[in-house]
Image (cartoon, rainbow, N blue to C red; front, side):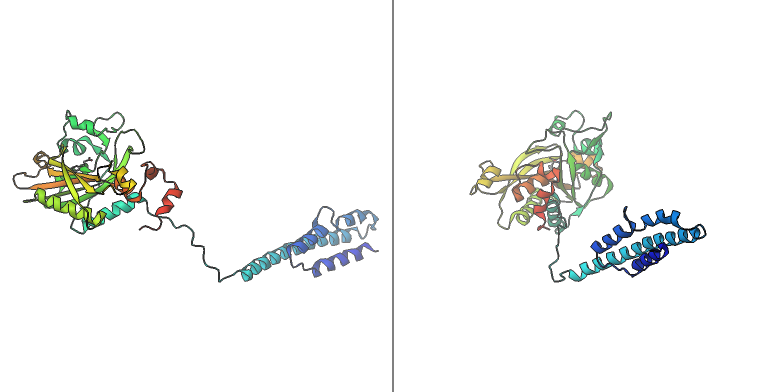
Amino acid sequence: MDVFNKISELLAEIESSSPSDAQSLETFRIRFLGTKNVIKPLFAEMRNVSSDKKKEFGQALNHLKTSAEERYNLLKKEVQLKSTQDEVSNMDLTLPVDSGFTGSRHPVSIVMNRMINIFEKIGFVVEEEREIEDDWHNFSAMNTPDDHPARDMQDTFYLKDSEKFLLRTHTSSVQARVMTNQKPPIRIIAPGRVYRNETISARSHCQFHQVEGLYIDKDVSFADMKQTLLYFAREMYGPDTKIRLRPSYFPFTEPSAEMDVWMGTDTETTKRLTKGTGWLEVLGCGMVDPNVLTNCGIDPEVYTGYAFGIGIERTAMQKYNISDIRLLFENDVRFLQQFSAVI
Ligand code: PHE
């Protein structure tokens, strides 16, 4: 057969073929563009073509080749479009949506927000401050001067090569900052992260969170503090909750106390948590020491106040029955997802 005829025949075939799926498109590609395609052998025919026709033949062959490529690219787009359309029309739009995992609050945040909420209801205002503190606000102002033995109660991370700057060991440093900047009446809570140089174990960590409270005004009494803490305990642990205050010691309060709530010994968990006593220690508190007021520029002859500090992790562990404090800092999603239903 005349090679020119062969070219026109193939050209016609290329233009008329319209594969409708990926498989017939691939057959088209192999036939016209694959390594053993039908156009290739025609190039060898060049030597049989008379010299006056060689140019025309070459052009016709090239045209055939580019036509095959262009047609293939066009068809490929069409086939792709068709397959997405098929996919859409095959979708079951009545299927319920896969809601996925939308994240959850961390148990420390849940408990902290709850505490903030409880105190805000009775007029306490949130104050936040720096985590890198100076020695004065963390210790000296809080009646814990350099040589005070109570400094050993809170093992401190000092900044490298510094005797002055440290990671705050309690949010009492916020109390010191507020007292030096504001005039009474002061009624604040200071939630935040604190650090202590302690060996990490199931029960203690080198970082944890506190909510501290401070109330300073004229005629603030120990009875006021007790009533506020009873209100807090009943909001947090239930309306019939009983509390007790045990004498304690903090350098910045006098008198000082620790508050326990009654958990009972009915279950294995409450027995373990309360070490068999039925009482769970939840916070430290006391009347602000007059020295602290003086240090911060408030006249202790005119004003009195109370302060308290609550550990968040301990409360979260008790509330959600978490046996190891380290779980609260590892951010393992398998642990955190369990709180997705809590707001
Ligand atoms: N700052 C104390 C602590 O971190 C807690 C506390 C605060 C105690 C206020 C009494 C009054 O242990």
